[in-house]
Image (cartoon, rainbow, N blue to C red):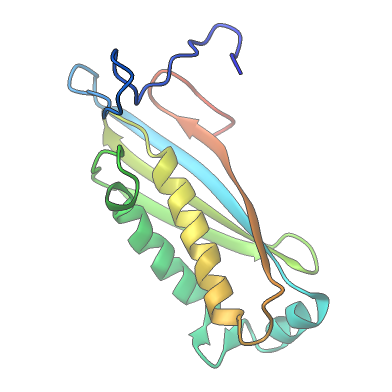
Length: 164
């Protein structure tokens, strides 16, 4: 799909069609921010049980553990996704709340001052936090559903998405 006014060229492919990391050495460092979220849907009885327990299971506090795992993932995104640059993370914040009676919304906001953005870090943080919620709750049910994960906003660099 080509977006009006945007190049359809993939940035991680070189002129010979081979995979390549983007060279950001000529870019100016600037404040970069991205926000992503991921949903976790529970069967109604499981959601009620979690709310009654204060979102704690036999494995411990679900949200606290998810925030720690998500933060660790943000800082290691470049080790998980081949062409991500290692970035100094200036800030990482999670907001986890019930979107409705059975759906937990995990939002991850990441900030840096660098030559490339933090979209992948925000998406990684949100999804790893969601996977951690699944892991913490799977003893209650395997019918949990993760997703979708979505970039909500980014700022800094050439393009702005949403409101960061």
